[in-house]
Image (cartoon, each protein chain N blue to C red):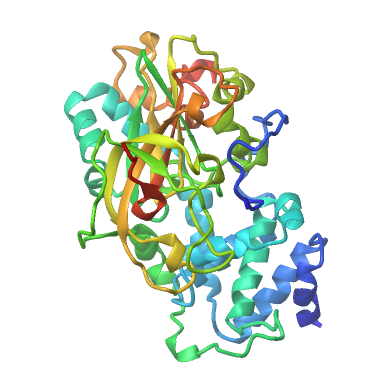
Amino acid sequence: MKKDILKQFHKGFPSNPEARVRALKITLEKEGLIDQKALDEIIDTYQNKVGPLNGAKIVAKAWTDKNFKAELIGNTDYVLKNMGLNGRQGEHVVVVENTEAIHNLVVCTLCSCYPWPLLGLPPNWYKSDAYRSRAVRQPRTVLNDFNVKLSSSKKVKVWDSTSEVRYLVLPQQPESSKGLSENELVNWVTRDSMIGTGFPKSPKGK
Amino acid sequence: MSKAHDMGGRLDVRIIDIKSSDQKFKENWEKDVFAITLALGFSGLWNLDRSRFARESLEPKDYLQFSYFEKWLAGLINLLGENGIIEDRKEMKDNFEKNSFRKLEAKNVKKLLQMGGPTKRSCVTEKQFKLEEMVSVKMDNSNGRVEGGHTRLPDYVKGKIGKVIAYHGSHVLPDTNAHFLGENPEALYSVEFKSKVLWAKCENKEDTVIVDLWESYLEKIEI
């Protein structure tokens, strides 16, 4: 019975993925190939432990500590490893800095590559066909969808994550947040500002 | 010919639903698919490139219709089928050897996720291109060794000229690794293309797109 469910998969839309997954799990458990506790641990990691707060901490530190920022950009993997922020889907990271002249935007047109250890799992729109197809051809229109408006004198650089290198945007620090402590600044850094589809925001207006 | 997953630059008029759920998993089965895929990823049966290839190999119609985790589920079933773990494809013979299978245990999860799967290799391979050099992407982006095989060369840059802006060392070549033909590490570069070179109607002539490309995807420019 369960094999029938699995066989049907390739024929059209998986109308009942839940039943298929259940059948699959039973088979794998019976063969002794999976351990429920390990699965729970993986889910817990990505559901509860790893998220954009990791990236936000790095950004806030880079805003307040020039030496750290230079090292973060120049020797990214070493810095992240020391902070325990490397790992699966973040083995090789490049930090790209937004400036007065440049706005960076990250996409993966071939799948949905994303720096998991720094931002967690990607939001749904990042995985959408529309974002994946449009971000490289019409980044400014895409940014407009996100209500991010840029002057035409600012250059947009779109980073397509085609290799195992993952990209993190270092957003510009808002003027109104200058002088705040690193801890306070963490709350200003939004997930989208580290993808390039948003700006940091005052936690009051979030 | 470009495949369904190779979406860069495809004409798509849909507005991006920025409010689309940030919930990581909408349903419980999605958690299972995610966790099983990751857990079996450590088993040694296949590698990351293979699992990407398994998802890309879906019928184009399915690829475009399936949700993200439905694609993962379909890819997982493809992988289990080709390993003879489930009877997914009749013509596949049972080549599953349990003794070489590494079962992921809970106590190792944290360590293995932290380790990840770096693709940078210490060997220094031939490096033909210099920083700031203008390079041309080859015209043919099909896998040269396996017909219809995996590649990470997107359709929208083939034949285009760009500038090398970074060198990342030698990285595992997905085109062979996905087909168990070896890692064949090659120099990996970031190549920056002017948008006006890529698109007939570009939004701003100063804008650029940067794509990570392996040595064998690139050609010298004849002067």
